[in-house]
Length: 155
Image 1 (cartoon, rainbow, N blue to C red):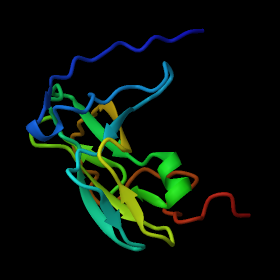
Image 2: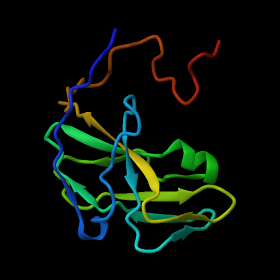
Image 3: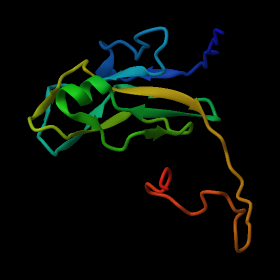
Image 4: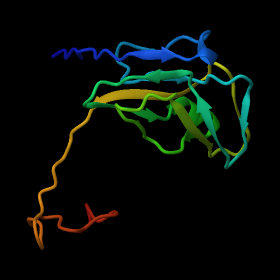
């Protein structure tokens, strides 16, 4: 069965320091996220254990009821040990500022980010709003109960 995703229109503003960079795009028809590009003026070197806020040069107006998640790129993580520090970073529908990516270098060598490098991926997804239902003193019982942090699968 083929499932076709329905596109969601997202207004985007290319900021002055990114006019020469392409807008984020899907790399393949099956990609879940678009690649975010570094809109840095000069190369940024992140030392081992260091972090940097990398501008993307874009701002978006997500429709209400949606969020964007900023996630690591697997190739950057594998090849250089660089990942998104607060993964997934959340962009709320009411945020209108520039999207920035907090990168951290978990590798053993300095990592350099240059203008136009693909530094993260962004996935737009629907948001579910909750309404708390106060249960008083106890929640309904389950087989698992309060077990967590590696408790499943134990005999």
